[in-house]
Length: 132
Image (tube, rainbow, N blue to C red):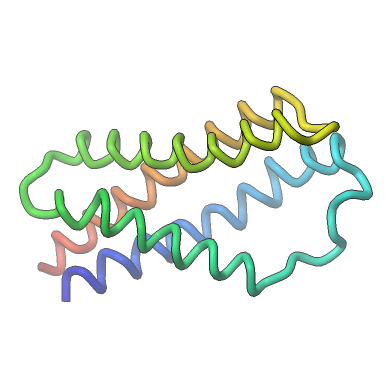
């Protein structure tokens, strides 16, 4: 039961907070730099695949193994490293290969992904521990 709670709470927090961040923080930055390269409407199927897999990998590799005995700071730190690696892979690859990618986009999105991953992982652990 705690694995299900861990995954679901982490996923919900990740999705809700990311939807806000994408709208308020990242969309204006990406529109300014990428302009007409962006789609008018997000393709939901690929986005869903990413979100479901990303939170599953975060749960399996970071939060589930540490659920019962690790201090929250260590879980948040490991999740932050996981987030920085994942978001950094995307951002630095784009910076290396795409014409209009900027260092500001890299710094903003990697910071966002790092904090979002740490926060959603910590929220999932807190919920799973509270429910037992």
